[in-house]
Image (tube, rainbow, N blue to C red; front, side, top):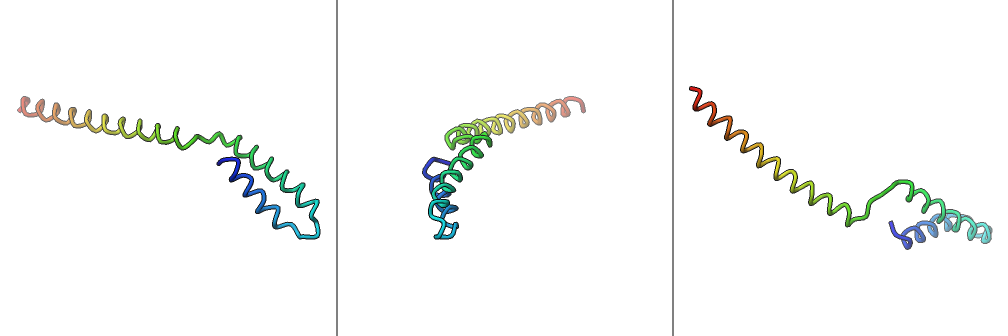
Amino acid sequence: MDVQSIDQLAQRLASLVPPGLAQARNDLEVNFRDVLAQGLRRLDLVTREEFDVQLQLLARTRARIDELEQRIADLEASQGARGH
């Protein structure tokens, strides 16, 4: 989540404060922004780019596992044919 998204969310939350509390609204918006940013940092999220790299690595790993499983099945089949 980028800074602009955090700002927009903080503004939306602050807009829920009654209009008569204008100063409180501004203070709350600043506090909302800080709390949201801190919370997101604690979540230890990855970027979309990092996620995509890991997704590609997982796809390559899955393909390699499928290939190795097929090789094992072929070896077992040929071993079974020799044993009979």
